[in-house]
View (cartoon, rainbow, N blue to C red):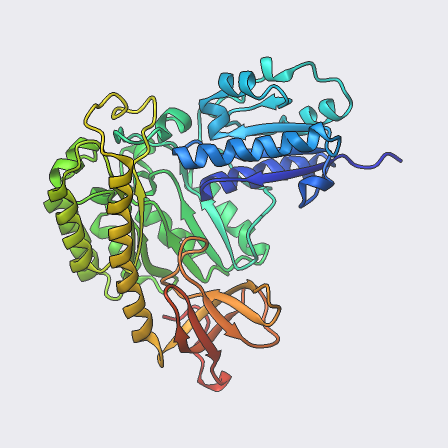
Length: 458
């Protein structure tokens, strides 16, 4: 009996990319190929690339080159590049890294197992020259994917693509226009995730608040969030990637009133001054952005708001930075990330000549993150001595500390709670007392079970 062909996948980039990786591995496993964790143990290495900004592109290229090194050394037989970078720069990859056996853009990846077999059996004839992944024209069902997240949570993609034309962003050129999944498909996926033991469902998309617009010209994300939260077995539902001026009162009402929708919203606003927002083509003014953010505080008491900003966008002045700094200090975001502008070809800002020096952009980024660090430390210190419900994700490398999250922490991008205890497992909800903290994470001890609340309670 022949041994199964072994496939290792390296997934880079965002949560949407991770879902693509899980779908790809689902096809691989369904076709009888063996999935292995380490590249050195594989026959073929698949790299799911990110092409969003310069740093992500470089990471993708470096990862492909490392896989090709294993091929040159005879450790693996083939290397396949898929995903956003492959979609955006297919010809460049084919020319500059000829060791890659195949380059596929964003597709349903159902043909990957057959491709892998051809590579291993020596039947591929420079398939990089003929294979084009072909961006899907409609949103795909992700049923049957192989989960790469712990049992505690899973991402659920509600739509693909984006209709916005933000001047700094190349995503629409890679992912296409917004395409919403039918709600019955999403609910089928949610039920399947619960059947596999998932406790928290994290809804993701390029623009989650556009859900439904392409179906019946209505924003229906609030209906979808409530419907997913109503699936038996779901404990937490979290929403990521909301577009600022499209957060309707119907959505905040669901976040406020539904016991299984956590009061948390990821809403990347990118900047605060009207001049920068106009230059970025965000379609909203400073007054509108500020109004929406303060409305979140009013309409969802206790909400944790996460956002991201870009420093160094072309034309950004010291005054723009001063206004942004003042707003960050005033609003006190619970969670915040800052990125320097990445000059991306194919975007509307690429031809602008009023570029901000990279060193200055980095100084501004560091200044904002220093402010946010102080805010975060003060908030963490204020939590010492309080109680919290924590969802356990897994065991820390030390083998004795469990890592979990509060409702205010999205997986992989926010902080963690370190709980020293025995007998826990991923997916468990535990009530704890916060006993200490550092810059971004919390320490906690278990409370007596008699004092705990029902799981999922706020």
